[in-house]
Length: 80
Image (cartoon, rainbow, N blue to C red):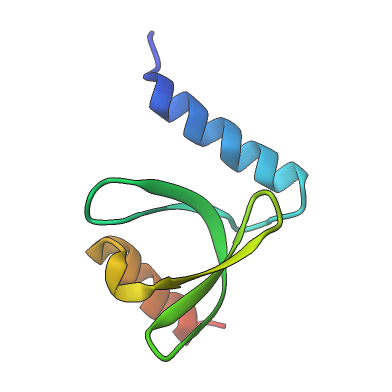
């Protein structure tokens, strides 16, 4: 069975993130389809702070994420 290269790369990045200590990393997508593998650290004032698999923290507007990812973050905040 052939695995699409994007799927393999995403899986590889998540696996590397787990090995590097970024547990609970997942793939987030903006409405244009650009992807980032990271874990949310905090959400406030319409912004989410992500820790990327390389350890770098970045701020990102929640409204610039896909609806699925926005819904995920709403649930993530409730269960923190």
